[in-house]
Every structure is written in C-alpha cells, then in structure tokens.
Image 1 (cartoon, rainbow, N blue to C red):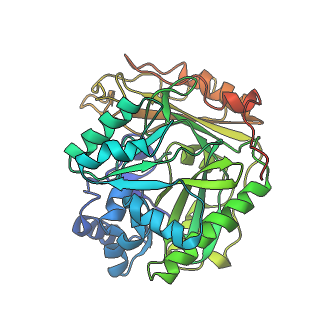
Image 2 (image 1 turned 60 degrees about the vertical axis):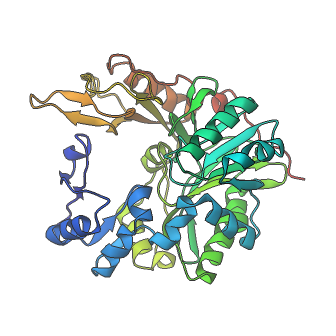
Length: 404
Ligand code: GLY
C-alpha cells in the first residue's frame, strides 16, 4: 500500500495526503509521527528543520530520510560557509565580504557598487536580499540587519540571466533535474522588492543544452566532492541558483532543498516516479536508478500573493474559484501554500504567497496561456500576481552571453 502523510500540511495537500499537526522543527515530534505512520521515507521540505538537524534525528531513528544533515545544510544556512566551500572547490561566485559591526558598513559599501547586493548571512526565505543601485537603500537594509543582530553579506553583482538548477545529490553522485527560472521581484518587468518567488517556468528555451552539463561539472560536482572531503557529504536536493555570465555559470546562492516556485513547474514535467528518486537519494543508491524521464513541452507556475506581500500580508480573506472548472481547465493544477480552512469549510488566505497555479502546454506560450486562463477564475480580495511569468523567454528577449 502507498500512503502519504504531510506535516503540518495545508488544505490543498489534504486532498491527497493525511495531514498531521506536527511541529516540523521538533525532532521528537517528527520522529514520533514518522514512527506512528510507519513511514518508509521521510522527506523534509523546508530549510529551517534541515538546518536544525531534523534529518539527522530521523536517520538516527533508522528511517530513510530525504534531506541533508544539519552540517551539510549549512550550505544554505550560512552564506559564509557556502562561500568557503565554493572557494575550496574552485567554483565561480560573487566576491563577498561579511560585515558584523555597524561601524564597518559604510567603508565596506564603498568597496562595492554600482549595484549593491546586501544579504542576511542566515536563513531569510529569500526576503533578506536587497539588490539595488541606490546606495542609501543598500545601507538602510544592511543597518537594519545589523540592528537585528544578523551579520551582513555584501556581494558583487553577477551579470547574466539567472537559472535555478536542482540536483539530486547523494555524496558525489549528482543527477540534475530540468533547469528553471524564478521571478523574484514582486512586479511585472522585474520591478519592486524581492520576494520568495512570484512565478517560474521550465525548461529554458534560451539556455544552450550543454550549459546544464557545464553547471553540473563546473559547479555542483566540485561542491559535492568538497563536502565529501570535509566529512559533511550532502544527501538530498542541492539547489544551485546561478547567473550565466561571460565567464560561464557563477553561483548566486545554494539552497539545501527544493526551491519554490520552480519545483512546482519542474515536477509537473517529471515522467518518472518521484518517490523512487527521493528514496534512492535517501538510501545512498542514486547512482543505481534510471535517470529521470521528462514530458515534452513546458510548465509554468504563477503565484497568487496576498495584498501587501512581500510586506506584512493581509490574511483571513475568502478565496473562491480554486475548484477545477466545468471545462476541466486542461493541464492546470492549483497548489496551495498559505491557505487554511474556516470551520464552515470556506478556504481562507493564511500567508503571503497564497497559492500557485501550475500549467503545462506544448510550448511555453501555451503553458502560459493555460496558467493565466486558470488564475483569472480565482478570486481573493486585494490579491496580486505577475502577468509576465516566462514572457521574456517567449518573446526571445533572454540570451546567454558568449563564453570568453
Ligand atoms: N526560488 C527561491 C527559493 O526557493 O528560495
């Protein structure tokens, strides 16, 4: 028998899995729930429990677990650790400096620009990053982080189109999934503040096919090998966020988990059983399974966000129109993120990014048309979404610089 439980879950996943009210940051609670469910495999989704070592606790309880150890999750949890691993592995990335005292901030900002990249050296769900040509905005963000007691990472700006490449990694075995592109700014045309991601598409028609091999060979494999060398082998999903510049792929960031909203699009095209790939990674047998097969065509995710997101979002509003319409809304799904159910069964908004419309199509233009037709039928007061997810690719406005 195959059964899935999700913790803590939401009303969307409750349609396909048993939902359990478990605190994902509590090792005792997660291990207890996994034992109670007699789980063959535990998949830890977000970075916070991974950085807290929940995967270590599950493995110590003798249960297969997809997700890195706390020591390996530092590749996302500490930007300074990630930079150190990349330097040792000879991987291209932005030049960076850590600032941990307000008195050092101005002099450090003077060594960067004309575009400043100011990051929280820790977990910030994508919202701790400010990329700006305005020095005072860069300074304000750095000062605010320092005031909160967070060290600040300043980085040089990496030019070139961005790619998210998710790789299943089991020690030194690296299996890439389809490359995708996120849209991090809140507004059309890449305007407004950064968010956790407003939409994504895959595959990338503008990316030369050999670039994925270059990313695997020049970035992911050397990093995986360096982590093995340090005694902290990575097991799980290594997310490489890259800029494809003239010198080749350079790392913007690593994450230790599947990325959102790219995953929704990437997995919509997966034609192999996901469970087999995750179980093989978790049990150290990834090299022995067939590589993933992919459906033809393209997939797009469009995020519906609550009013005021990425600021403090308005929550508690009724959402309507998420049911599959009578015409079947071919090739689309609505996946929930920040939703909850009221006692009377009404679906409510409960977070900043409320839900995702995921659509496939014969090509990117068709996938976009399907996604936007479906999202038009969903109503949430004050909500907003980007109307240009994947549009620059459809209009052939993205290109990779010639490698020098
Ligand atoms: N796509 C951004 C993230 O998952 O962090």
